[in-house]
Length: 316
Length: 177
Image (cartoon, rainbow over all chains, first blue to last red; front, side, top):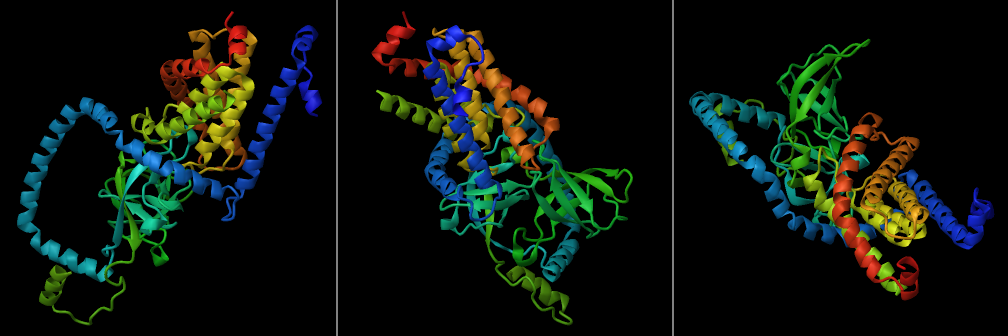
């Protein structure tokens, strides 16, 4: 077979000049392609015992620190990118902050009652218990050519990060951990096509599923379980959490509904969601590594007096 | 001499992988980064021929496959870059033994980008990877090709110059009359 491949198809005179060289380079090509196919077949099943795993471990061991160092060197790059956007951004921000300030002052005057009530409800539902977090920095980002919406963070099993842990930042849900090594972890972003998150509509408590579209902007699709429920633009969506808090803990904001389209030829509707987290600008994230500081299913007292419950809320 | 060349090539590939995954992604255009590894592979192929292109492509692609944040079946980038590297090496051999002109290099880079992206996406489709999106393929290929040519202007002359310095004497006589 190799001999056949080595026979040049055209130009006998030319092939007589360097048949050995041609044969050698084709042998190399065939060997390399065979090696690639072997790798693909070995790794295609994605089972836990893939023989490529040790290779990934070793690569992460070598390149984790390298990426970490290179990330520190990206400050000038970031500055360059931000310099152009800086003035506009500051002006916009100033305006927005002024407006926010006004509305917040207005809200403050009327919100005590609402806040107490919300704190009480929160305590009842235990929707957002305080989880133990491990902070981490993003040191590598998957490119759009590879269709992967994944990032590397600089925390691994040594820091208590394991597969199927929730990753979030100050704005909302980032994704979940899919692969870990000693000092790094790979995070699948919610915008990836392979990602599906259970999402609860804040306004009506209806349940649904948020799935990624694989777009660079990170837009998400939202399908409600209840076919009759119609989400409205502006509705906010939070995670409803999984059993044992893996892979997603409850109560993490995901995003906001921007538009709703009825499904063609079927019941129900699909909502487009703009995530709170801009996938191109994630830097510092937190990995939920521990259970909530208090048990999420505390027993409810039959008739707690409102005064006691608010003071408890402050203590917690 | 040959050990020095292999060491240099390995060094180039490692630096390229690191820079591509953690620095260049921050200046991505619509999410598409410059394929620095592909450019280095093409530079090696243009200076050393198709065997080097294939092996360097395999090694560089394998690194892209296993270095985090990669989360796809290993071997896909390796196959894509090996074939792209081999083709780039053929272009150098077919035209002449002399250096390839700037336009030739640019066309080689565009061709390499197209071939490698297509093979990577096609293997993904064959393996039923749900993240491969052929609707976005054309746009991303266009941006990637443009970006890669820009990166190649800087990287390819540098790599080829350094690789040219470590050419053995007998080959230098043959290549540069």
